[in-house]
Image 1 (cartoon, rainbow, N blue to C red):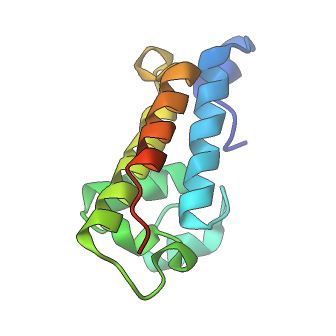
Image 2 (tube, one colour):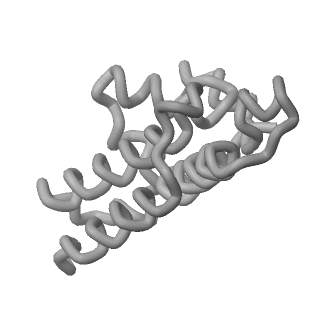
Length: 122
């Protein structure tokens, strides 16, 4: 359920915007290492749905707490935080509720490539 765009649920029309939504949610799964739907998140003040949980963490400036510990490891410099924030923001743009606010897949690919090119190994 969490991968399906809200507009698809209303119209049953599959298009690039609905694919971008699903891809954005997949990016959130990758960056957090969490399930799309997890009732146990509610016990810690989060939301059942990963997308809503990430939005809430982003709004509360606790974004780094939701990042997968495997990604963060023990080293967390300002550059890595910026890259993770940019990646998360990209995923959130992709999974915007309004299809008109979502990026095209070409734009998503360009931004992911830019993030990759700006990556500095630690």
